[in-house]
Length: 139
Length: 139
Length: 139
Image 1 (cartoon, chains in turn green, yellow, cyan):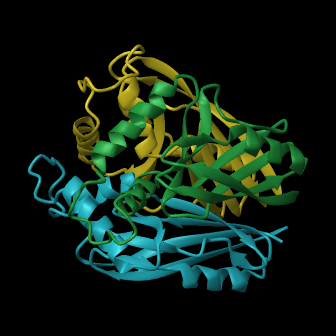
Image 2: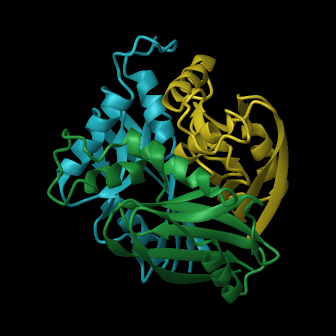
């Protein structure tokens, strides 16, 4: 049994979904691990991880619209507002989604379903570099 | 240290909670692993995983009612509607809950609390076969 | 490759966030594992795990306020009400956040970002002892 760790930096340019599935699959290949477990960990509290449909881009658009209504940026009730109107909503959206995800590996491939894509969901308007830790264990 | 992987297929018949705790416990037993970590990964984006109270079934009913209001199926604002009125709400409900879960193992048993059950939460009305990957690592 | 398991008991005194980052880091040190994966599992369905900003306490206050509005305690529509007005909202808030979290370890340290704290979020008003399972695997 071995393990392999890598930190991938993703440049984000606004409140969008960044598909990182192939980047993660490349690290799995690099690890040489055939059967195992891949853990993703995002080192931030205003961006998050989400596994969602990779076929129709409208799904991601609807998801963004839903969260825009659920956690509005124009809400005057946030106390934490010094870092901009998108900062506190970003924290709440991250809390409602995920900081870590796990995907089992078989035959050197992530066992994602046909319609599953792995995304970093950026909740801040400004450009950021986001650090995604990829930890792989197996043999 | 060894690992064990199994894919369990669950037939779902509508928007309900399917208790898979004993199915997962059976796979843990099958693995022969006494101390370790059990990872669950659902290969779908319109059903999800949830760990919730296993005692009073009203808890699950209230949970369903809450999500029915939070993510309504009659909302005309979804762009992605070609797959039926329950499809986009299913994706949102999955995003708000979980695709992967981890439960440590001790003495050959999942370390769930007394009141915790592990459920597949089906968000689509029609019948489906859902694939749950169970990955166990330990000794 | 070795593993290490510990159950930490946390006393909670009301609906607050309990920062357990240093407690978990202490268990990582105790394990002697330098590179690996730390899994957290909370054995309850009315408290949850959350990784959030550790700098400005107003972030946690805003998060609490948001959830108080999203999942109100005065909502008369819950069927499960015998355990008190805060019980069913507690289950829903737990479903919307996390029961398990994973943090990779490098050089004997949790790879959390600079601004990330790991919290137990208590959703019940009364005092509780909460059991957090910490499972560490690595070398």
